[in-house]
Image (cartoon, rainbow, N blue to C red; front, side, top):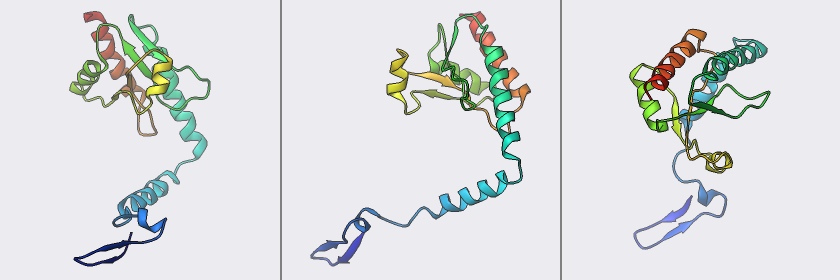
Length: 151
């Protein structure tokens, strides 16, 4: 980003170089390479089928919980479920799930315009991937059911 630096002045490089401060994120590139190498051992359609099966399982089990509302019902959506639970902030739900060893994301998910379309500011969002199991989803549902009964 710098063409020349002295104690008296700094001369910046021409664009686009002047916007590239510091060392490139080499760790990110190496990590991406390792992730791609790992994923290549799987057949892509089987990964998609597994993720979709987890999504359907989670949706089927969460839907009947009193006070729980799921947002987003696209036919070919990725493996995430966004929901709210009456009587609880999304942060409270996330903290309770965390106490039970379940990692979810809570908040606006860098998608405030989309959430506001649904009249929301935040949701709870479990994400499912190749390393998740039906049993893990059932554990999540069990904790959420317990919260729903308490409210």
